[in-house]
Every structure is written in structure tokens, then in C-alpha cells.
Length: 119
Image (tube, rainbow, N blue to C red; front, side):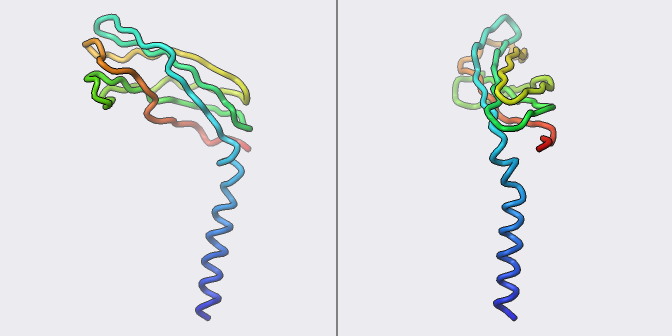
């Protein structure tokens, strides 16, 4: 009985992991920070995002952070507006972050959010 319950748990875990594999392997979004410019009191960050995956993505947002102190932390951030991106497409945009001072460090993408993709 004990072996049967262990086998059932392993089988359930295997089926659960295989259920999400298709979308996990089909989503591949890359991004790049192109330019960071400062015009008191706003820092503008220009970015690109490229969909290298196998499914079209909708409702994508990037959280862009700015390293104001030059110490590798990103205390100020903003989310990009929603955008959709088809397979093989590259989109670009610019976000403004009110920093108040010239950032001593660069900018980076801290997080990505998107709607549930349709496979």
C-alpha cells in the first residue's frame, strides 16, 4: 500500500510538470535598455523587447528601475504601458521616471508581467 501511494504521488507530480511544459518552452521574451537620459527632474529610459518565443504575447509590461545611487540597487521604478508583441517582433518604447537627480548608475528591467498567453 505504501509503494502504491508513493507511485501515485510521483505520477501526479510528473503529470503536473508536463502540463505546463508547452507554454514554458514557448515563451521567450528578451529585452534591452537602449538609452538612459536625464532632464531635471526626469530620467528617460528607452528600451526594446523582442519575442523569440513560439506564441504571441498580450498585455506585456516591463518594470524598469533606475540605479540612482550607483550602488547596484534600483529604488525607483515604473511599469511600461501594456503592449502586445507577436512572434519574431521587436517593440520599443520610452518610460519617464521622476528621479530628481542625475542617476549615478544605469537602468534595468526588474520584472515582467503579461496576460495569460493562448497556446
